[in-house]
Image (cartoon, rainbow, N blue to C red; front, side):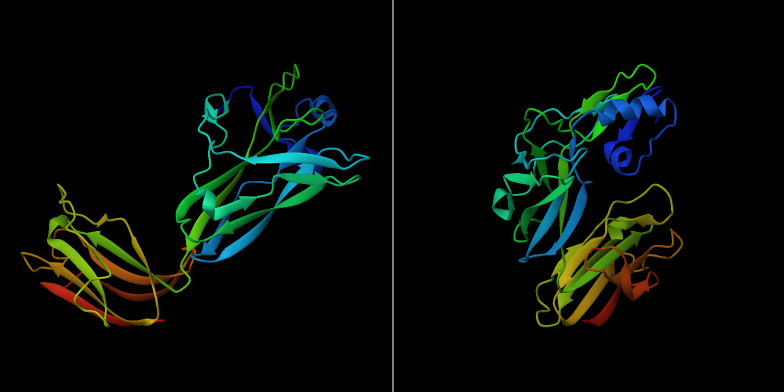
Length: 292
């Protein structure tokens, strides 16, 4: 994406590494930025925690200049929905917290000690009810003498630099503390023929998870369906997949469809072990397996 003559600079890189995105008119830009008393958050981050557990993240703030006295910066969690700040029409950050207030606790201030250029503050996160895709949004309360910004934009040639407010985003993802099983379904042209069920062998009457039927397609092919991830305790399990009414499986000339069972890392970052994969069967296929 081109922004013409607009440049985005990371203050952190400017202050701590002395590097700019562009070398054009570098000295005048550094002088202008260096004359400001900036305080900024660390980079946005993602934390993973097991359901029911609690963790404390030490989030950091950085200052562009040291001070002879302690500096106390007030903090607040953003919970209201407001318009997002933008750079050439592009939103800088989401603007509101989506995590339940009962599942986090954030310090109300952070103190940068005299002579220091950084400090940290605690963010306590509780795993119960957090779920996946939640976020905590934190910002500094404006105060005299400190520019609460980490990004500047504008043209270097005329030093028309504008500060853009940036918040700290802590993305929260709950992970499986037991065995994470991924069920992958890739149907052929006739997805409506495919259904499946997953059972614990301790209860073969009620499925733990199930899926299908899926939409049919206009042409033969392989059509991936959304993965189903299930957190399971140690034990014995049975996976059953059906093809009805034609009993010709998922790979019989209308596309090389298949199912796949695989265990995953708790944070979904990588596969651990493939339990089964097949697409050539009749009316049904059964896979019995044990975890771990």
